[in-house]
Image 1 (cartoon, rainbow, N blue to C red):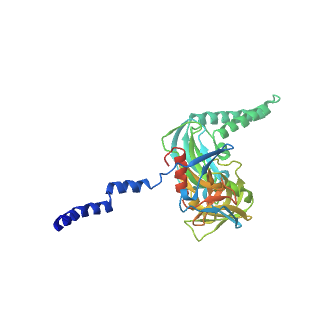
Image 2 (cartoon, rainbow, N blue to C red):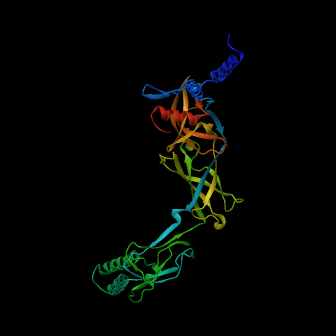
Length: 377
């Protein structure tokens, strides 16, 4: 029999080993833990009838939820934003019709002018030549009245008409032509309409050529307001509809008008068409390039809406994931329109009413789609 102290010593030596055996090797335990985690699998793509789908299970993206695309009734007011512009039927451009130079000017940018008011003096030998021909034709006509040659009076009269027409083409008014007593190289160009100088290119001493723009005049008592209407709302607008416009400059003042034109063209990028509205500019408060909020009285319509969470901005467009079958979704490009309801977006194209789209975790599903294609999201 072994002594008691020898047994105690052996037990003392075995105790640490027993403790280590219970705790185990920490490195071996970590390896075992990692081994229990299942490796993530690459999402599966399905090709069918030329379409591409993503096989998706709920466990692949925890917390995923779906919602149905809704169609709601729109009120009888269509709202958009617009910009004030000149009515181009009430804009007149003064163009040089001769070669010469600018001798004098009497108006500047934003000045108000009256129709017939002298505004710029031009020098050109063309004026002197045309006036000489006109005076000579008048003298010939006077002599022909006393001549006995048959038809000479009619010929002389035709020469006067032709010479006068030439001066008119050079930009001279009837009053200026009637006042000619001797040829002169200088004449004053007059305002063709009453309005405001909106463009001024006339500088004293500058050389001019035929076709050079000197001034542009516009009136502000009647202006246009142009605005964009989404393609889906075009059926709700027509020429003659009444509207109201409010600007940030005059938020308490309402300007009334009506639609005068609807563009025949559609912007392929924004899916909008431009409308033109006639506005009576009371007090000349509306200025060109001023922005305005436009409300058009129209028939009620409808719109498709989805939660904003259902849309993912990827690259240069929005996409949504539509459930086409249980456990299968399709990635679609979606066009959206303006919408004022917080948390929702208006869908113009890409999905239909009644279809189910992913709401929560749509961003994660988009990442899986890229991963299935071997791309980085």
